[in-house]
Length: 129
Ligand code: MN
Image (cartoon, rainbow, N blue to C red; front, side):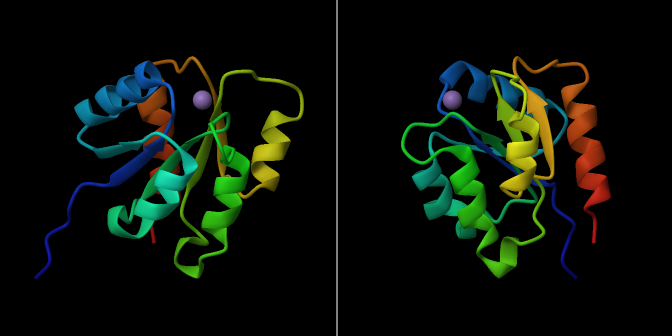
């Protein structure tokens, strides 16, 4: 019998402070959190990490978070994987753009460390098989 393991969350974020904060906040809630610094690293490691949810910074060096999301969605295995966009500048149209790129939800930075884990838990619950 296979034991239920903790949900794995992949954080794609180039800013070290932001990435470490997310890892710390979600790690405390019992998630297995893996951080990568850009889209290429995310795409390369996606299959081995096999996350239950991705937090996707939009402003990344190289390929932006929208394009990384589109490329992830091209893989059937990850067609329904919850992807949550993170963006620092909450500009008009950002939410629509992230949803259009295939993200399921949108969180603006800086994250609220009190509500953030609840939001993530709710999204994971919604996407339970
Ligand atoms: Mn960034």
